[in-house]
Image (cartoon, rainbow, N blue to C red; front, top):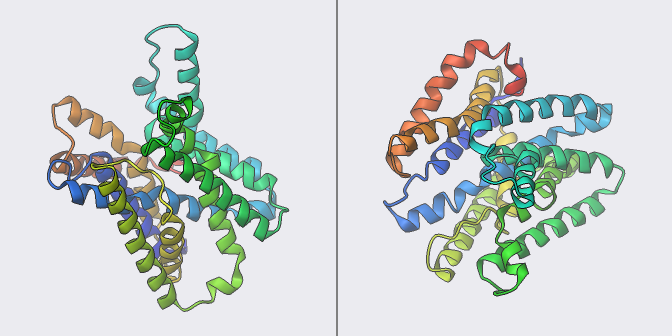
Length: 320
């Protein structure tokens, strides 16, 4: 099966980044290094995954096969939510608050599975808005992302300290969802696919674009590190809107044909399975940091390799 090998390599690298980020590599070793990587550069993972999905979603729109696409992605979501059921199905007290909290997790996803929930919502939204002009879609995506960015900055810098807004803006689910996070990047991927003129650019321009974006992301992360005097956890940055599309276009433009289905499998499987091993080693008293990151990555890779023979039977779980 002919694929763009360069894109699958990028996805595998991003999956590795997810593993070591969730294990909090560099934690306790270098505060600034941790901020600029785990809380900075490594935040490109989900945006690029969204961009990739949106880029290829044009085939779903043209074939009007949303239902088939949803069946596949929803099946993945349900399967992995069941795999992690032990970690999120917890009701300490049967109260309206706890029930609503449980329902929110079930709908929005446990831990890393929020990506699939946001992907589903973003895809449905884009499909419903597919007849809008590209300019309107661009403005809508930027507006929604702007609202999400305002909420995260207002929350971290406590612009509404002492008010209910401060509490809401500091809830991660308020901005890390399909509306303010998923749709803007998913729509970006779709718009990049629709922009024929942009795809004709020389690859060197994409390289410079992504380099400039990476420097902006490092700068934004550093300014927040200084401004908040610590290690602020920002899921969203303004500079991601620049860096991620540029990096995606640069890698995609390399166009290395080949059969890289195995790379795609490893990337997907690593993303979904690694929290099991992080939880295991944390239960064995390993603290977040470099050792945990190494153990979690090595164990996840081993498990994914052992499961490779079952990917035909479990294809729905790994996007196959």
